[in-house]
Image 1 (cartoon, rainbow, N blue to C red):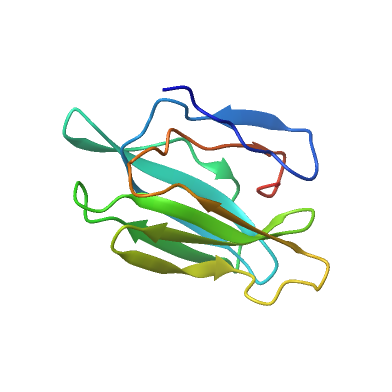
Image 2 (cartoon, rainbow, N blue to C red):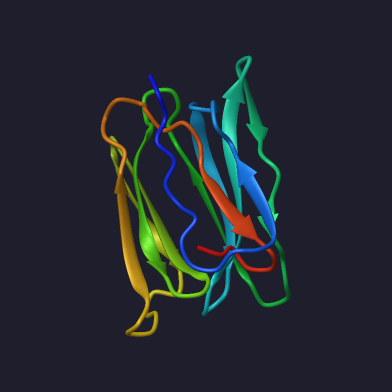
Length: 138
């Protein structure tokens, strides 16, 4: 099956990252403050072991952290939604068993753009790509 790549949207620059082919996402680690998502790190199962991806973004003082760990292998990613302006303001993960509350800025500016990627119930998530100079840019 051919994969469809969506994004990045918004600013460009920085480093491109792409996890194509890693379809067994088992969770997500993130850091954020009141304005933006600061970093994202994905968890995968490879050879029956939980393996973290590289961290994308950065950490600062006075940040909050979030860990979303799926009930793998019975739970899998079905949607990614959130909002962005020049940075990724908030992100929410949906699975076949429910959804994880959004983290990041829950009241973005009125000109922020919402996004909602529905992956479906077929374990078809083949990766995520973006740019990251400082914040997680969309």
